[in-house]
Image (tube, rainbow, N blue to C red; front, side, top):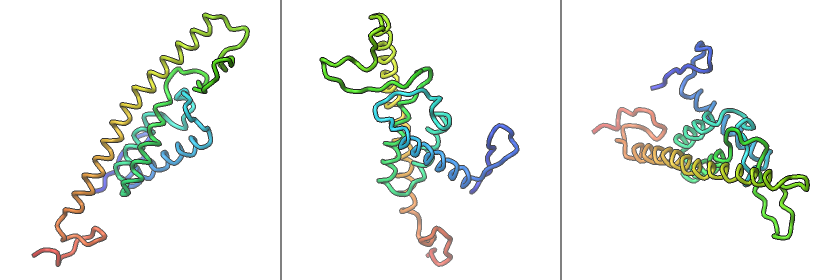
Length: 176
C-alpha cells in the first residue's frame, strides 16, 4: 500500500513511497558524483562539505540498499556508503593520510610550526581517525541490516503463492 509522507519543513508537501525512493536514489547518485569529483580516498573531511546532511545520506543509502533487487549492487552501494564514515563535525580543513618516506618532511608541518602545534595537529588527526573507525562499524551494521532486509524480502517474494503473476499482479487462476 502506498503512503504519502510529509516532506521538507513546510509540512504542506506530501510525497508517495515511490517519490521518496526517487529522492533517495537522487541523493545517493549526487553523493557518488561528489565522491568522484572530490577524490576523497583516505581523507577525513568536515560534514559541511557534503552535498546534504550526513544523516539524510545515510538514510538514503539504507533505503536504496533495502529496495535494490540486485544483490551484487547492494554490496557495492554499501561499500560506497561506508565512505560517509570519513565525514565528521568540526574536522576543519581536509585531513589527508598520505604515506611519506622517513627522511621526508611530513606534509602537515611547516618550518615555522612549533613542536606543540605539530603535536596538536597529530592529536586532532588521531581523534578524527578514531571517529572514522567507530563510524565504519556503525554504518557497516546499518547497511548490513538493509542488505538483510532486502534478502528477506526477496526470499519472501520467491516463496509467495503463485497467485501472483511474474509481474506481481494478481491472477485469479493461481488458486487451487
